[in-house]
Image (cartoon, rainbow over all chains, first blue to last red):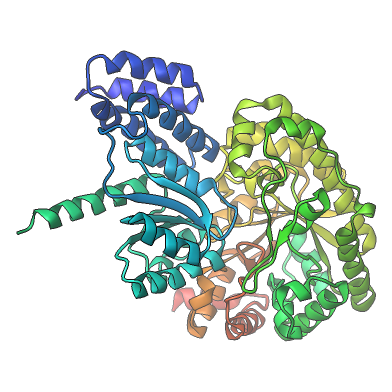
Length: 219
Length: 349
């Protein structure tokens, strides 16, 4: 697949045009020659990354980013059905909105994660107490938290304290508007990392996965 | 100069006696009165007293009779979720399937007890303030209201996939928005803030804006019987400022993430600029930093008038210390007096 820049560009254009049929046609044609995971890594993920970069530069609309993620999520579900052994089941991921009803950020990141071959559990929205119980019950290793409102973002501090008190070693990855306006906030609330957009969130999850694998490989 | 004269002069792109200062203290009135945020918003009299006390305390240039954004959704039939440490939030979306848009009917202002309470607050405040102090009413733009009506996800699907339903939703929302804005003006509001974050280039491209939010804004603002200032509520707008100026709005509220100097250049002579102190980061500013932030904003946008010092979002978070708001107020009263000669002097030093 190396050198298939043209395919990435065509696929990106089909996503930006919100043309799921063309996106599927391009991916299906390429899928005869390569493994699904390779297709995801070398076509889907780079196309989403380019779209994310363009949004950061104000060149595409958030609606296009969102619809691109949804189209890719659906296509990747066909290539690698949920539960497929080829999907990345480590780290064990969950994604949630803390306290409020602003789901867009969570759904953007969830789509991008699923389109990149991860299999996050979607916990909708939850309170601090509910999250502590679910992290314990499900043995989640990485919890991605989206917030839109500053008071919700500040609640992460309370969540971190309760998780620590319960001895739960989950990594917290946070994102959302308050973190874009206050670059110190994620450290203040005790998060392990902050993603400014969906693609950054994926890079962080990959980094955490790599660290965990390196840790396990150590004698 | 009175606060109204000060604001009108700067809106006319002239230098008044001092840079006008509009600090978006809304729910802080509850703290002034020793009430919970929910109790505070339960009665018009609380808003009037809270705003009046804060006007004396912060010495700013406008009264803000606004309740909260989710108030409009209450008129549509959606509940509001109150919390003890932040602004009330709209509850779950009103519309869960796009086809439900066909059944939406704009609520009547006169039939909504909560909107009537907000109008009562404006009338009481106007009786107390007279004509010297501006009262800023607020509406959510028809293009941005669907974020609360549908939830952001469903709204983005609507924008991309169902143009006929989008047109229907805008028609319904425009009727409500115009009626609500004009009711506030009739009650005594001096001008209307048109909150339109969905039109920001953070959310849509310029191309999409010109086909959607821009058309909606032009139609809506033309039917509002008073001055309108567009607020992007932390969203970016620099690439569309020339277009925004053609919607009939007279001022624009801008984000802390954009260069205020570049915005002032783009707006000069066309739109007054309001902003752009970072209300989120303000929570941990030191007094020294607060003065520096005020001076930096004044230096970038103050010369020549056409500028109102304000925050970037239209709402100061509950967690911002009172001490910092008072330092900001002192700083604009000290450094905001025209002519702003200190800018050149400090630049030369």
